[in-house]
Image (cartoon, rainbow, N blue to C red; front, side, top):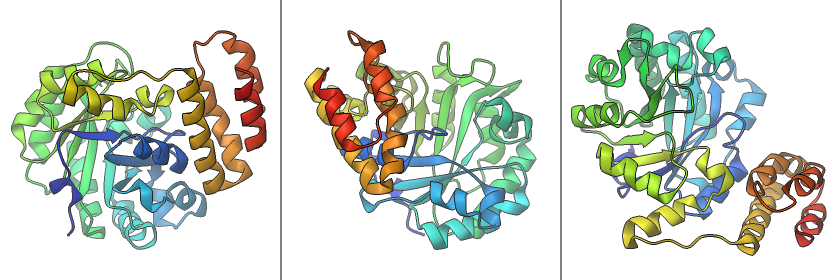
Amino acid sequence: MKNFWKKIKKPILALAPMAGYTTSSFRQICKYHGADVVYSELASATALSFQGKRTLELLEFERSEQPFVVQLFGNDPKYFSSAAEFVSEKIRPDGIDINMGCPAKKVFSSGSGAALMNKPEVAREIIKETLRGTNLPVSIKIRAKVGKMTAYKFIKKLNDLPIAAIMVHGRSLKQGFAGEINYEQIKKVMNLVDIPVLANGGINSPEDARRMLQRTGADGIGIARGALTKPWLFSQTKEFLKTGEYQEFELEEIKKASLVHAEMAYKSMGKHGIIQMRKYLLWYFRGFENAKEIRKELVQVESMGDIKRVLKGI
């Protein structure tokens, strides 16, 4: 088994998985700006075990995205072996991750995502079945706490399994995506295992990234929503960790970065890539003067020419 996690330089800066957002073009722009590892959107193990075409399309990637990790979710162990086998043969990513931390009501109520932390025996079987279906490194993503189950207690129950890496979101299920980070839980997981641990949650600036690394001792970080407004957060963070300073992007640089992203989206998916690009453009140009009027135009773009025309007027 080729395990890229053992070779990657630390601290690892990863683009954490986000449903609806970690598309191929977004992964590409984050890699372009310095991300070390990128994850796919959440993909249903059940759908993949039946070789679902739409789910398969979610996982297509470019070589420039590597190392690329496919993230699976589900609640029934019996589907994970065939899903992992299918992904390994048809998609050929660098790793497979299992989501055990998603707090979305729809996911949680189905017994998937963060709900698995309350069912460690089911989680164990899911990991074992995934490992049975692939020779790729298998990692997991969890939360600091779900109910009475802490990240530390959960990993202690699974620590005998050959998991390749762990990403810990530092908030509880109840907190969702807001509130204080539980640095101590991430640190306890870090001290428990001898595999890479990535700390996730609330990282919106290079200062946040450094604080997370210092307080947890983690091997790296997972950046999610912070990258939506500025994919260059990865390169800024690397610069800050190395020199203590970083360069902010001014409006013209943001416009250039968004055009690079749009070109990637168009190359990957044609006109549909431009339509998909609308939601990213809305993130890029939040908070600027006349933002409301600009966003009204950006949400209607249908071509590269449309995007260039709107940006020229900003």
